[in-house]
Picture (spheres, rainbow, N blue to C red):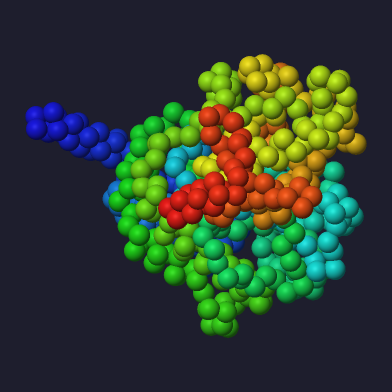
Length: 446
């Protein structure tokens, strides 16, 4: 009892000291036009999902919020030089980890590519026309760097993008939509367009200046006080009916709102239960530390994607091993696959794979990975599978991060379907009766 009182007293003193040290007014920077998350409307006021979330948070910690709108580059600069205290929301960029400290995530978004209905190329590199991207979009930098060989048309405002979508004068566009792991009836897409590819799923997080632990701690304390009902109220506020009174935009904008708001509502319902408390900061992962721990049920190493080190030549059969490993992670609890690392944790790099690919660099490698995932798991699987090429000890390695699938994943080979799971740090096949029992017990927990 005495120990509990001491701990409670210590916690209360931390809360009081953090609240006291910070100013009554906190300046939050946000993108000037990033519909529907944050924007400045004709009345000069800030509006959007993230804006409502910050105002709710401020009410929990007895603070006043002063919003300041600008480009993403300006927002980062303002926080770095002390002109703003926090950024309303952005995705983690490893290049910013020296200047920013990221908090627990507010919501998760999926970056997707939508194409005009008359287009369905085998790969994105066969589109041959410019693709729209919002200048203020939080995935703009990632998209333009990852698909550097594509043609882009940048839109300074959401309205400018919507105008071109309305006339279908743009081949396609990139957009971030709220991610949800629950199953929904398909929401209508902009007329004349279809979803072509889910690229990645990432969380939007608040960020403060590196070293500002006081504000980051206060952020977490305020987040813990927010209730499910309050989050639902924000979602309902943005779940607008497409009428002229509530939506002074064209029909495309209305359809986007329905898609975005409905996903947000159910995602928040799920996450408020599962992720009430989380680490107060997210730092760049030390990949070498993870590798040094060795393989496990959640970690797997593969030397290459195509290069056979024993035969010293390309061997596309090795791709089947990668696919088998991914399916096993999806069927279990998710995990991480390192390509370019041998069984002993030695970093080999991807150079041998590069030399046997048509486009011998990281972009070419990612294109092969994307096509491989599309072929065996479908384009929608990218919301659960996130691949990226990083540099570790001056060598490039592909890291594939996977979540748990909402349904069983089978791999078809000829007339046979195989089912794999992770166990004993390996990808193991299950027979028919074993798979049936595993599926019954594993997915009945959801």
